[in-house]
Length: 177
Image (cartoon, rainbow, N blue to C red; front, side, top):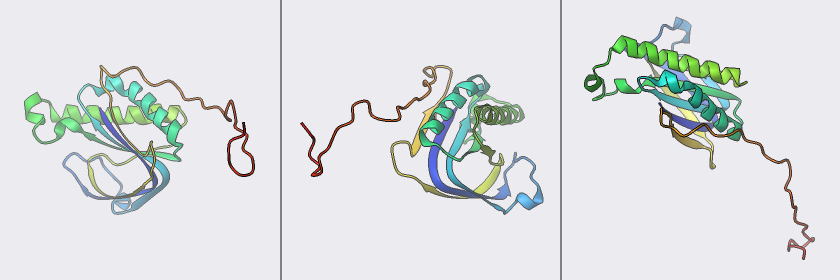
């Protein structure tokens, strides 16, 4: 599984045209813009067998969410093996693979919701128009590969509320001795 995580001030998408294996949508949802503010947008590429690493992926995404404090986590998933050049080589059953990809994305969403996150899953298999205003900073964009050989999940973050040894500054701004 490969996850591209982007921290956004604002993100909006509009479903446009159904792809060959798109999930069913209400007609009113097609062409409607869905805006999100202060969110973490995940583009999740699902590989065969990724159901086994979904728990680990949820812990890593939760770690990123703890660092970035998003209001919403927006998940857009796709089957990575279905991209050009990979399908025929592996000899995969397309319908089974798509069902597995949908299961992985649903499981990831559920695990994040169990951990207290607000999650929105974008419609699988639909072409979308997107607009994002990505923030600057160290945690603005991350690419994470999660597989059977991924190191153990990161520990939970705890940050002190204040510095252990604060520095006293005189009025001119020079450090006190």
